[in-house]
Image 1 (cartoon, helix red, strand yellow):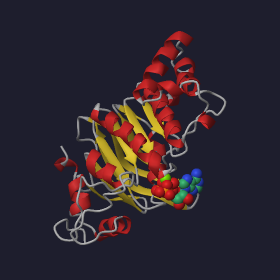
Image 2 (cartoon, helix red, strand yellow):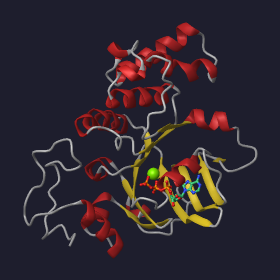
Image 3 (cartoon, protein in one colour):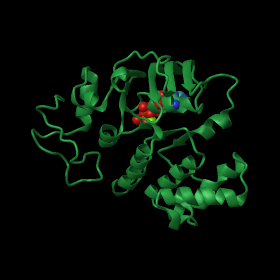
Image 4 (cartoon, helix red, strand yellow):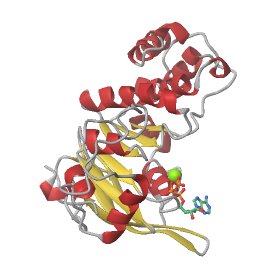
Length: 289
Ligand SMILES: Nc1ncnc2c1ncn2[C@@H]1O[C@H](COP(=O)(O)OP(=O)(O)OP(=O)(O)O)[C@@H](O)[C@H]1O
Ligand SMILES: [Mg+2]
């Protein structure tokens, strides 16, 4: 699967199994061209990780997919629907494209259950009993059944983020977008959220994940998109991007994040950091330097 995705430009009209296709996406804020020409796609049931330095346009790209930003030009396709079209029913689109943000965006006056139930009642028009049943099911899946009656202020950051994930999943989305879902969390809370995201990936959910969690990107994704200065600078399999990227800028970015000691397994004693012992980056062999 991943060979056909390697290297820009990608003909996004080609893959029949793509659930999201982004073609020549451009986004301008005033005089600032934030996205110049972004092209990639995400096949159904796959995980695409998006990496890149701050300001490279990752969030803007993600927000364009569910029309939180309006693309200036280009095409975004969701299944067989052109997203950036005047005919798009935005509420219906967002019901199928779940999004999880860095800052959970929970309603502070509603309990965990209330937050998960809300869209089921308002958008899906479910009655209280039905909405509650589904919401409790989803809270159970993220390990928070016992926190259903807690307000966001009574939850840890990791728990709040899992409520946000449960809320998105309750709508039965066809794809999930994550924008640095763990960046605001205390390091000790990151793992629980990543575990939920890993399980979700294993269950076959299609996911586009903007992240700085390099091990998540390395282990869980099928495809890695590296953005820089508003373009897809390089993309390919995790093995390719992490071990033998074609471009110097990709190498530099990864080197900036990964402090490597020759021949050593790294940060094994920090399981909650982005490094685990499951992948051994070495100066020699991994081709990163
Ligand atoms: N609503 C907006 N109005 C004007 N400029 C914006 C707006 N949103 C984003 N930008 C600009 O677009 C550029 C890309 O921002 P974006 O948030 O997409 O980057 P990012 O890759 O997600 O960065 P980070 O890793 O810090 O989250 C930045 O220069 C930012 O200032
Ligand atoms: Mg961002």
